[in-house]
Every structure is written in structure tokens, then in C-alpha cells.
Image 1 (cartoon, helix red, strand yellow):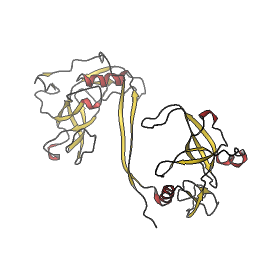
Image 2 (cartoon, rainbow, N blue to C red; image 1 turned 120 degrees about the vertical axis):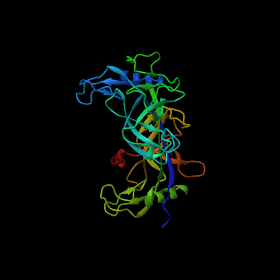
Image 3 (cartoon, rainbow, N blue to C red; image 1 turned 180 degrees about the horizontal axis):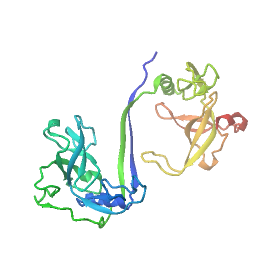
Image 4 (tube, one colour; image 1 turned 90 degrees about the vertical axis):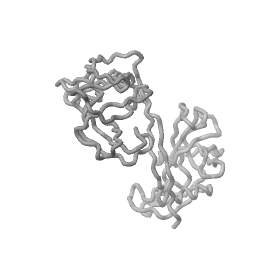
Length: 326
């Protein structure tokens, strides 16, 4: 049996979200080195703040300033920081109940003394990032802090101590939205069935697998019949021509995809297959693509996969021949 394929895969995209008044004030406050919480109906102060009371579900809007010092309530040591984490050296993840707050804020604790220097109940303070833009990363991390007086807030730049001034959450140029990059790194293996499918594509062939029970041919193959639940081992070459069953017109250009819009993406039932696969339709204006259109693959340079499908010039397929594949 050929070796099953595997390869590193990265899924990455920017996640963009708008902010309501509470989250906007919280993140803008971090930009200005002010930590804000929100008062609940029963008088508790939540940090980070939320828009709705977790107990009563009532809308919350009363913002209050809390200190940039606090107490570690629980922690876990991170021996090997990963890419994108707050620190590039071993550190502790901590929940910190800031002075004046009733809940814990999750962040990193820079503990040069190692895990033996961290304990529940230790006093810590915010280490602000040198450059701040209105995000949770404006808190670079927490650091150990031995207070001079209970519940005081320490300003590292001047050495002065002060009590929170009771900020009302109003700022100039408030942050109204954030973009958070999301990324997932992992090793993907397509399995036995799709490994054979990919090897066939490299030879400009399309291979599916037939269910021994219902006799349907699935492309791409899954290794098992989704209807009967039995393993599929019989390989069947299908296509290369096929029929457009359904389609959509794409009007929004995808990042890093060098295709002019509008274009058509369609489900295509290859001849001999009982499952439609998807592909881009080219070779004719987008508004002339239709259900039943007969198409054939145009292979990418070097093979590997079809770049798109184009009309064959044959008469359109009769609806009865593909209605079960919609």
C-alpha cells in the first residue's frame, strides 16, 4: 500500500469585530493605561467588563476604574511559549483579581524566578506595553509587586503611588473595532482514500470509490459510504467531463486569490460519479453559466488539480439525469 500523505497546514485569517460602548471603553482605557470594570446589578465589579449581567441578563453600562495591581487567584506554568504568546520565555498564565474587582483577568505573569516564585495570593501589577493601540496586548504582562500600602496602584514610570481616580469611561478617539489574527497550525493527513485520489490527480485522472452495498461512486472518496456506513475499497475512474448541477456567482474578491470578480463556483457531477464536487467555471461569461451545462477540466500548470472547468460544447444535460445530485 502506498504511504499515506501528510503535510503541514496553516489556517489563518483576520477576525474583525465591532465594539459596543462597554468593550470600547475597556480597550480604549488600556490604551490610556486605565483599567475599567463594569458594575453589576448586585454591586459586583467585573473585569474584563461585559455588556450584560451574567446572572440577571440585564444590560450593564456603569463603568468604574480599578487598580492596575492585584492578587493571583490561580496559575499554571507555561514551559514552552508558542508563537504569538505574550512572552518568548517561560512564564505563568495567571488569573488576577485586580484591586477593586470581583473577578479574575487572565494574562501572562513574567516570573524570572521560575515556577517556584509563583504562588496563589502573590501580589502583581500590570506592565504596560511601550506602544499601545487599544487591545488586550496593551497589557504586556503582569509582574511581581510588593505593595507599600494595601490596594495601591504603582506607576512604574514615575515611582509614584495613587488611588484609582474613578474614571467614567469617556475618552477622546475611542476604539470602535478590533482585528484579531486567528491562526491554526497542524499536520493534515487525507487518509488512504484521498491519498489515492490526490495521486491520481497528479496524473490528471479523477478516481473515486464505489460502495459495495449501494454501488454509488463517491468523488472525492471518503474511505466509507456515508449512506451505508461500510468501507469502500473499489476504485473507479470517473469523468473527466461532467455536468453543472448548481452554482453561485461570486462578487467579493478573496484576499490572495488572483481571480477577477464576478466569477462562478459550481457543483459539478462528473460522469460516472454519484456525488458532485465543486470547481470554478471559466471559458464563458458568468451570466451564461446554467444548470445542466456540460463542462471539462482545464488543468493547472504541472497538473495537480483542475484550475477550472470550461464548456465542452455538448448540448446541456437533461434535468432528469442529474436531479438526484443537486
